[in-house]
Image (tube, rainbow, N blue to C red; front, side, top):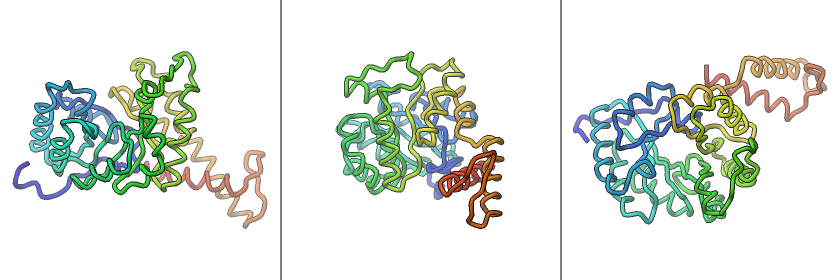
Length: 288
């Protein structure tokens, strides 16, 4: 870290509001700037799965050197998990002012989240991707430093011996666990959670379906593995002009009714509908 780095760089979009989280291997620092130019809300520099064990130390040093050379940049770092020999060095590197948060893999306890948060003073996004993590959801979500939950479906499938059916667009095998994470987020007062990666890089139609389904299931963002995924996912989590027009009509009709019954597009509107419209308008204002 250079001596003149005294301020904390800010992410393009705060972690609580981000819709897209794009992975970049820490061993390929030249891709960080390209990822930032993709339009993603957050760049995640990966020290875990994307880096071979023999390359961990070198990749960490490359990340630190890149942050030193780009003092106005801010990234999130996926560190190696608790119990690995690289954790402490990762946490030490994440004290760098250019690191705006941690992505903690295989989060299974509140203590792990709190430890990582206290070790470097950065907010933590725990990836819940094991049976033990699912069992401790409430505690993890309430842990000091936890800013947002992330669903790690691929590792969860391995841990629980689940067999996803790629022809099943609803991914029924994951629905119970996806719902548990959304519920735990709500109970803890956290932002909408982040859904797992979509691995078919070249299938834009399927990606849009996947992202829209995640939104409909109570999620507010997606982990991404390719810059081409940024546009469709951003669109899925951004209120459309039609949605905004509907919400404005609902709010106006409710105000005109003065607490009485109101009808929009031939449908009766009540308190839950009005609340949904107000939330949608708030989201649209955030993106304007």
